[in-house]
Amino acid sequence: MLALGNQSVDEEVVARAIAGVISIAKSQHQSLEDLKAEVMADDNLLNPEQRAWLSEIIAEVWHSLP
Image (cartoon, rainbow, N blue to C red):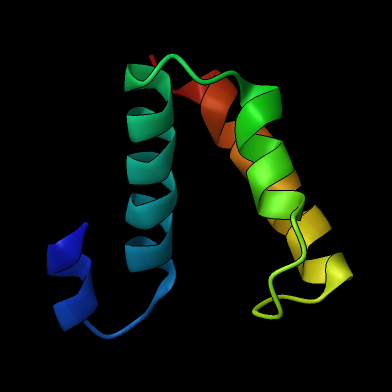
C-alpha cells in the first residue's frame, strides 16, 4: 500500500488500492458490512454521494475477489 503513494493516481492505481484494502479486510476477518461501514463514516475527505459510490464499488470488488 505504501508503494502506491509514489505513483500518479489513475484508474489502475485506484483499483489496486481498493483490491488491497479488501484483501487486508478479508485477512483480518472483517465482513463486507464492516468495511462498508468504515467507508460510509463521515471523514470530510469524501462527500456522502462519493462515499455511497465507493461503497458500491467495494461491494462489487469484494464479490469478485477470491
